[in-house]
Every structure is written in structure tokens, then in C-alpha cells.
Image (cartoon, rainbow, N blue to C red):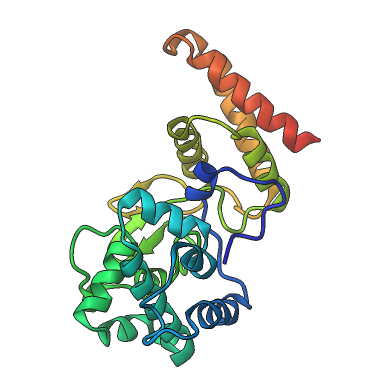
Length: 255
């Protein structure tokens, strides 16, 4: 259950900031992986080992769970919740399905998505509910505003799920081995350029087509022009650093 739509091998930091829309075979593949790894367990979760969890939930999910201190038992409970959702048609009404879970199951969902507050299923949007039932590394953006609702949380990832393959390849090459904080900064800059600023939690509308490579070429050209126009007003080192990055990204897209 790992991300498939990237040709260039990507680092853990890059993977943690990227989300993929589950494909048509995602749910069937998940159920097969869960069945294969949980065969012989009394309840399908009791003895799932770390490697088994990675095979089921994916590398991104298990890596983030380790960073967050989520126990293997809690991950196993979550894995079983997902299998139940996928096998029972729970994704057709994710909010209703979440409302049917036990307190233990719902808290496992909360912990696996690193939510601070208990989940109030009645207050969830369908997008927020569906994303709680997807392992980290996957999400849906039902209203196409560039923001993923995960429970009550609102999160952004980059590149966009529907970005062209050539841009994704260029992005991951340009950010390879970059400091995670700097990569996040550039990702947010590009995200805001594509989708526009969020005001009071509401999108002001996409400024560029996220699925068009020319959108990213225009954004990069605009950033480079802005750097030249504002060179004298930037903090020490910013001009050189930003110009090097956006010039590299521009070059990779031109190749």
C-alpha cells in the first residue's frame, strides 16, 4: 500500500508532505493485504507486526505513526477499521460509518490521524469523514479547493494530486535532500499561487489549473521576476537561495 504515481524515488520527507488520490483498485488491494497479513489472528489485528502494518497501511502511514508515537496495537485497530469500512460499503457514507464505531475504534482513528480532540462525527463533512478512513499518504479533495479536510482539521499537501506527472517529477528532483522546513515553505508558496489564499477557511478560487504544466511554468516565471524586482528588499541570502531553487525547477520543467 505505497504511493505509486511517482517515477522518481522520493525521500521520507517528500513522501510525508504528499497525498495521492486512491485509485480504482485501492480498496481491493487494501483488503487483500489485510487478509494476507492477519490470517490466523483471533480478531485480525492482535498480532500484526511492524512489517505487517507497513504492508497493509503503507510506509508513509507507519513512518508518521512512529514519529507521532502511535502504538502498533493502535495502528492494528485502525487497520481493522479500514478493512471493515472497505468491505461493508462504509465509504459510501463515511460519516455514518464512523458513527457506528466503538469508542475504542474511533479513538484509534483519532490517534492515527494525529487529531487532538475527540471526533464529533455529527459535525464532519463527508470529505472530512472519508479522509479519516484513508491511511496517511492518501486523501480525497471532494470540492477541489486544494485543501484536504481530515476530520475537523484542514490540511494542505504539495504537489496537487492532479498535477501533471512531469511537474511532480521536476518538483521531487528539485527538492531532493532539501531541509524539510524549506521544502514545506516552497510547497506552501506554490500551493498558494495555484489555489489562492484561504480567507476565513474559504478558498478564493483557483488562480491556475492544477492539472496543467503551463500553470507551474507561469508561477515559476512570476516568482523569478518578483525576485529580480524586489532584490534590494530581501533578507540576506534569500535572493540567492530562492533564485537557485526556482531556476532549477524551471530548468527541469523545460527539459
